[in-house]
Amino acid sequence: MTSATSSALPAASERRRRGSIAWHVGAVAVLAVVLYPVIWVVGASFKPSKDIIASLDLLPAKPVWENFSGLADGISGISVSSFFWNSLMYAVLAVAGVVLSSSLTAYAFAKIRFAGRNLLFTLMIGTLLLPYHVLLIPQYVLFRNLGLTDTLVPLVAGRFLATEAFFVFLMVQFMRGLPRELDEAAKLDGCGHLRTYWSVVLPLSRPAIITSAIFTFINAWNDFMGPLIYLNTPEKYTVSLGLMMFRDQEGISDYGSMIAMSLVALVPVIAFFMAFQRHLIDGMATSGLKG
Image (cartoon, helix red, strand yellow):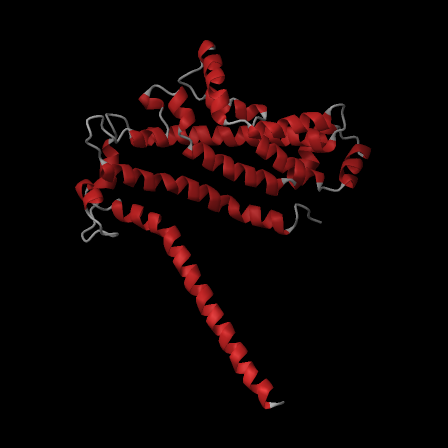
């Protein structure tokens, strides 16, 4: 080994070490920026309301529990638990509607050959380009004329009619990757399309279904615009609307309880994700096929 080669090795090692240090410093900086809002919310939930805006401290010097204990008293005589129950009902119905309708529609597009299939699939994908607000007024007029406002029906009806084009597209792409031999074997065993969908395709599409369920649950739980438009009775408000009730029209707002409730509202979302994360990872690791 020449002297030039031996001197180049420590130089290359030094460059790699500096690059690794720079990468880790950058990663820590990005992590700090991402976690700052979370740490601020956690710290603010333990501050008195008057100190949340006035104080610049990230964490309280003397944590208080009044913000959380005050949630038990409710808002304007309405129990906070009713907001969580309404949001849970909304999210569960939304998940059930998306999983059932989107998977059945995706099976038709992916596995059944019929006239106009490609045109209909293209039109469905084209609905993704329509802003939500374009359809808001005609939908509201329709549900109002049917007397269904101030109920969960306008919020979940579309989920049972496969109007979530993104999730239909996601499941179609996954089902198209399943071997055609499985469909042929099911047909030889005397299975029709409905039995093939339920017993063969649906179990193998678990990764796409769980992914759709997770995102649907999060979107429904955090939905603000839909409940704001269709729900009028405070007792039927979801968590997102319940948070708005902490803001007084006269300018007196209970920021402490609002932030405490928003922190508690994260628990169901995190729990739902953690509960299905293992199934999602296991399904992807096996590509949806076992045996």
